[in-house]
Structures are given as structure tokens and as C-alpha cells.
Length: 249
Image (cartoon, rainbow, N blue to C red; front, top):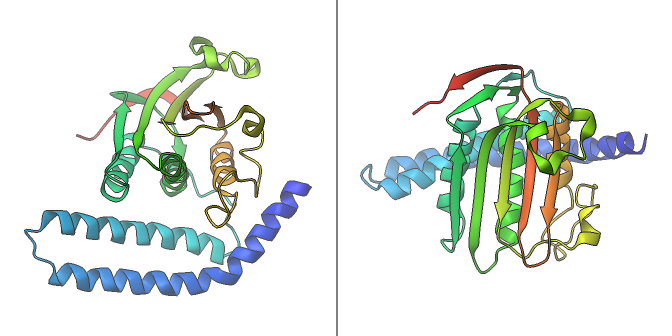
């Protein structure tokens, strides 16, 4: 019941600002079109940044549309997920916008099992984790994102998930070499409105939303961290079948 009230409060607050934000996003998209037209076509770096801004604005518009219809927590119609493409999109966005002191590495298993969900939801969840990683590495560091097929019986980290042993998942690992999280805080990181960031640097809903997204598709998320040793998040998405799809080149 308490969680329902939290969802309701978030939706009510969100609906109040969604329309205004949509108007602002439309102005951004229009401005990007003008900017592209006056930017030399051979300026590849500028054109790449323009494309990222435009793509991010469109994704934000989709999120605002969900909030505006008071359905921020209604699951989109699931569709086959191609994590390789999602990760590549994130790598391009992060590499172009994060400080150059942050190294970004990705590792995608060649043939992943099929799973379903909303690409926009998954993209936003992973971007949230990447932003947290960036904030945890103010002096630079390494952000690693990997995707692999996982059978929980073979993964020692998940022996505690005995009720799920033997099930197959696609696992996304997001790791940073940042400041880390104290053990006493780990149990609270997914709670709504909880944040360890300084005032004005976070609203405490990022990891809460990430967990909700993963659980919405029947998966779960775990975290490992210690002060000075960085943080690792594991996102497990249940597969729809064991047929592996060929990734795009």
C-alpha cells in the first residue's frame, strides 16, 4: 500500500510539469534542426553531438508522454530487446558527453538470448546508472558496461537467489571505479527519495526507477560496492526463449 501511495504521488507531481516540459523539448528539437542546417556537413564531431541531442530529446519526449497520461509506471507493450544496439547508443552518448577523464568500455556477448521489454525504459535505466557512475568519479575513472547470457547456477554471486536457480537471464553489468558506497547504505540505495549525494545533486528516485523498470519485466537487480573500490550493478532480465539472435554489425 505504501509503495502504491508513492507511485501515486510521483504520477500526480509528474503530470503537473509534463506538458510544460514537452513544450520545452519541442523547442529543443526545432533548435537542433536549425543548428544542423547551419553546421558544416563535414564537421563530423559537431554533427555527431547534434544527433545525440536530437535523439535524447526524442527519448525524453516519450518519457514525458507517459507521465502526461498519468501512466509513468504502466509497462509498455513488450517487444524483442536488442541489448547490443541499446548499449552502442549509450556508449556513443556517454563517450561524447561525459568528461574525457572517464574511460568507457563495453563488452557484448556475440549471441544473446532473446528477451522482451521497452527499449526506451531500458535505455533510461542504464543512462541513470551511467550518470551515477559519472558522479561517483569526479576525478575520472573507468565505466564498464557488459552484457552476457547467464544461468544463475553458474554464477556464484547469485547463490543467495536460490528460488531462481536454474533460470536463464540476460545480465547487464554496469561498473565504475568511483568512490563506492558504504555497506550500511547499500540496503537503502533502491528506496525512493534516498540519496547519498549532496543537496541539489539528486532526488533519490534514479535507482528506485531503475529497480522498478527491471522488476516490471520480471527481472531483478543487485549491487556490490565498498568505499574507494567502486560500484557494480547487475541487471537480470528473464529470457523469452533460448534462441540467440545475431547482432547487427
